[in-house]
Image (cartoon, rainbow, N blue to C red; front, side, top):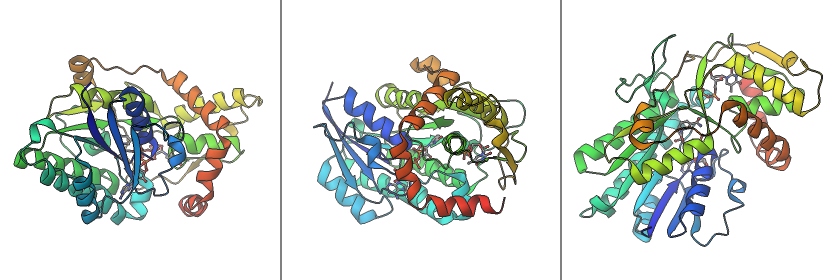
Amino acid sequence: MKQKTVLITGGAGFIGSHVVRRFVKSYPDYRIVNLDKLTYAGNLDNLSDVDQYRNYGFVKGDITDACFIDELFENHSFDAVIHLAAESHVDRSISGPMEFISANIIGTVNLLNAARDNWDGNMGEKLFCHISTDEVYGSLGDNGLFTEETAYDPRSPYSASKAGSDHMVRAWHHTYGMPVIISNCSNNYGPNQFPEKLIPLAINNLKNGQQVPVYGKGENIRDWLYVEDHAAAIDLLFHNGITGETYNVGGNNEWRNIDLIRMLCEIMDKKLDRVPGTSSDLITFVKDRAGHDLRYAIDNTKITTELGWKPSVSFEQGLERTVDWYLENEKWLKAVLSGEYKSYYNKQYRER
Ligand code: NAD
Ligand code: TYD
């Protein structure tokens, strides 16, 4: 394997930490530089098992700081970027959109500019892998799937900011010849996800005997993918994807929120030796999210047929593994819940 220096942004976050772990362990000849601002969602404990590896280094920094990003590129001679750093939670984007515009759009452009300046004359050897979301395609009705050709129709400040970042990445490709690959993935779940997102929030509340807030009637549908399967897809795209192309990544695994939560309740009753039905009594329907997208579903034909990727973990297995992880990692959970989480939670759910 050729030696490479790879910048992974957002590597202290949920998906980023799984990508960093996979690359550090699988590619000892690569030097992996993890750049992260360590916002509320970034947590170096996520990487405690790999932070002593010789091929791993961490830099604390903000992608919205153009001078800092330029200097970082001048000091490191990166061969490739895997860009995951972003503000990622829809509900926070509704209450405070500006952070999303700044991190997701300006931050991405700063990275593209620095890569362009430093890679000029040598672009053919380089790669900018941009990790995006299926939410850029908008909301589906009862039928149909998002393909790579589906027109963008983002409807939340989060998805609009990610769509903006995707457009910038494509613009740098077409205008300046930047070698890029874009992936648009469905909802991830698994260990290390910050408990503001549906699955870890529900696990944490059920564990503590607290109500589980389900927005609206719980009829919204998401397509769920185990995070390590997403990390495997990113690895494959990084090594075998075609420059300039977009790949949709998804698990063919659609669930209505209420059905997912009911299944989670059954698993929690079993794991915690509770009388069946104890957990489902905690389900509480609350005021719906503003502009709540009804359904996301991915057509993953391109990545499965062209690159041979497929999800390896069934939803039942993945959910059970995830529940086990949260129950075994009390210390991790306590640490992330101690910061600003309480004030976020009270503000977010008090009025519902
Ligand atoms: P996350 O919120 O868990 O992690 C984001 C990380 O980015 C954190 O470590 C945070 O500290 C860092 N970060 C945020 N702003 C930064 C800044 N200005 N400078 C440097 N670092 C900054 O998010 P995640 O769920 O791991 O998502 C990672 C990426 O994958 C995002 O780009 C997201 O849009 C995309 N994605 C997520 C999902 C999902 O279901 N979670 C699905 C598809 C795509
Ligand atoms: P989330 O995990 O925030 O991901 P996204 O909004 O990016 O899909 O939410 C997943 C689904 O769960 C979404 O339809 C909103 C819903 N939801 C609830 O019903 N209750 C909650 O407390 C949260 C956080 C989400």
